[in-house]
Image (cartoon, rainbow, N blue to C red; front, top):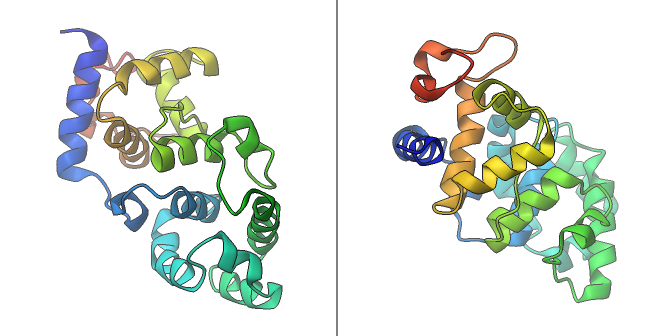
Length: 204
């Protein structure tokens, strides 16, 4: 079987049975919710964010309510997660997008022009929020790619990601992120338990 197809098959089968089921993964596509989750997840564990995410979305359900929020209130709620500095990020994004009727852009460069939004978050918003397949590459995916495909170039990694995500895009990306979390970790990967071990260059 083609390596890409086998990778997709193994990833999808594993994710459907074992993948982490966070609230921002379960909800129907919503660019705002995805953007909020990804900003909160920066330098923070998913477990910590999961407890806080619902509270934040309930209080600030869209960009308009976020724009109208008092900075003191925003800082107060974010301080509960130790993310006080992210209040400025949320506030500046909401203020900027007020000029666009609070519509989150579907264009990667326009997303990256927003304060606090880089390559990873812009790709996640497009992929998970708009169903636009935009390769998601962070330090975890780079580590996985260097072991699994023996690739270190972001451009080549993105080509591979496109190749394995033509179908079931979101589930494949979520599966990859979870494989990185459970097994393909630094500095000691748990290769013997990884569902991709039979086709991984690193272990074979």
